[in-house]
Image (cartoon, rainbow, N blue to C red):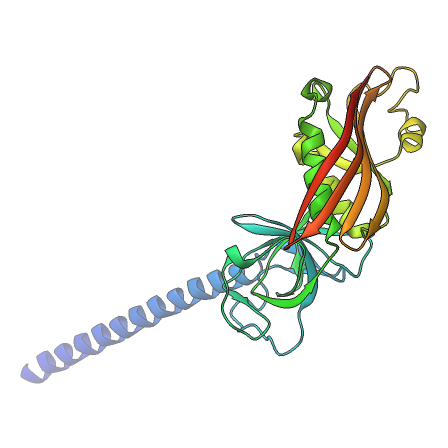
Length: 287
């Protein structure tokens, strides 16, 4: 009788032990499956973006890898410095505008730390990042590192940006009801094609609407401008560079809505000194 009881007790203990081990194993397997599921889901969920060469891929690829700064970065010219990004162009290309969000590293030419306040319009910088950009206009990316080069773009860009801003504020009634602004910079030789694109984009902001480059002939061909009635829903700004030699520039600037709605800044003379432009307007006219 005692042997039977012992056998029964041992059998019950063995069954209980096997049940316990099975339950633990099942619980661990379930946890492993859930972990694997999260990992797979996360790795497949990257945002589709395009790199500088036009190739697409997951935006978060190699996110855990340390950035490699051994190779040189990509050169860009700063057109505007904002609190959260810089507006830049590739000085080697005729088009392509970008907003580049700030990364953790900003350095001077020798690798010393600098601040956002040290960045200025016209600086040529090297930007390091994974090459992926968001396909918007301007295109967007966030760099890992910025390094100064000691080089600058066209000094005249800052001058013309200031003139465009002042012209937008003249006779503001001409700006009412417009949905787009157009800029004719064909008469400017001191700026690169990329700088002209950036100037049109920035200047459109002075009018609170989209800005793009176009001539009167192009607008007429597109059906947006009538030689007699003018431009119903837009405004045309023309910048004519008369001369640009050394530290001196002479130019005219006009904004046109119609034959009886235009404003003229004539015989502008500008002087560059101590890192800044100053200019005087010879005469102003309205029609």
